[in-house]
Length: 145
Image (cartoon, rainbow, N blue to C red; front, side, top):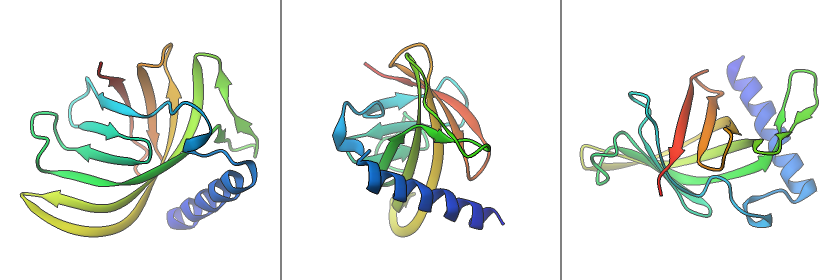
């Protein structure tokens, strides 16, 4: 059931981004940069214009991470079938991370999976509240300068 819902969300995401042209390249990327969390076990993120690495820890950037590509669109689909874009300063985005591989204990392995997230800015461009649709987990990450 969860896979079916995720597939529906991903299909809607692809349809909307294809028809509206809302992709990473249309305006300033709100996700690009390096991010960490004050919460235990969240990890460290590096987002370039279209790729990412999600590290287990900021203390070791050579090992124990996922990597791949990502896309985002403005807004998030709500249960009522309408999109919520948030308010100025607390914009909402839908993020899809395409995991292409993982490096664990020095060994690379390929993987093909996706992660779907709703992201909302918190009072500034330097903090994001994230909802992981796969796990239901919620956490905050802060941009590093």
